[in-house]
Image (cartoon, rainbow, N blue to C red; front, side, top):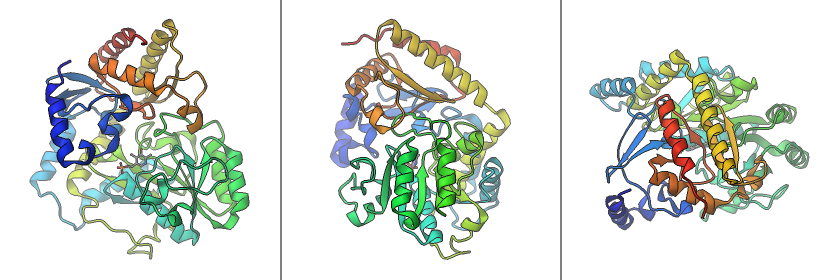
Length: 426
Ligand SMILES: *Cc1c(COP(=O)(O)O)cnc(C)c1O
């Protein structure tokens, strides 16, 4: 693999961009590698500036479910762009996208578009606090909800401790309103509710965690959260920024038949453009300004180009229902990887649900952040670098999800498995 050009580009980037990247994981730090610089992408492939081609399992961290440079998305975007790129006044396409989201999610009556998942979460939490007139929020250790101040808390000392910020710059006064519980741990949540009963505005969760690696909820866990929230008059927020249109047309909540009060969306609904959305019951959503008093705004919210990409993506997903096929392909790939690694005696776990999965180098079942954190990240780094060398691009961290797109075929999976077969542990 040639990488001279990427190496030089990284050097240049570091002079003018902090760490040379515009989002930290892209620096490849945790996998002991130097980032590749991408020139273009098509279907399941990324092409770097040195002319290498990679089968992509990161897919821009999830959005590119139809593969890169999808024809219909591109043509809709071009048509939208020709009409101007931002008006800052309503368009009928925004209503169409909202209608599609409302139709897909039984728990969403109304939806507000924003420009990122982070903003969606920020809005959902402000809304929950405004509606309940309470300040505290329960969050699960290892779940990521964007880089909102009061959500950048996860490194707490376990159960029942008040959160300490994970980043300098987050005031303790914000962090102290964030309560932490381990993922999949009902008792911890019950204890928090017992201690802070009428002070908890909301429980926010990735209903399938993707940001500590893929960690599905245990049977009954989400239902229990639903009933605890109802009982305590707190809101349940499902952060489906990844899972919303990844695990089915209508997210985890539709698959598992649970109705959160608020839902945050992003990634796939923008079809590769910056977008986010927060939706929920009409009685809650009407509290948002201008109907209500909880303030939220955005210069580029509902941007016509992003909305065109989102509509083109969601319409194809709705029409094609690619989910069963995506799932069976992913199952097949994961089965192959397990077989290959087991034959070599390499301890590992694969957590998979639908077309998202994580290969953990770990010999215990991964159900929460603590178990995920016991994984052998050095070995993941070796595996990542080996696969990259073989033309397969995986997420550059042990604690991220892999995704398949509708552009991945059996042939790409075979190539990936052939690469995995050549992996040697050092
Ligand atoms: C990516 C992500 C976010 C943040 O979305 P951005 O568009 O990066 O701001 C929030 N929540 C979850 C679950 C995510 O995966």
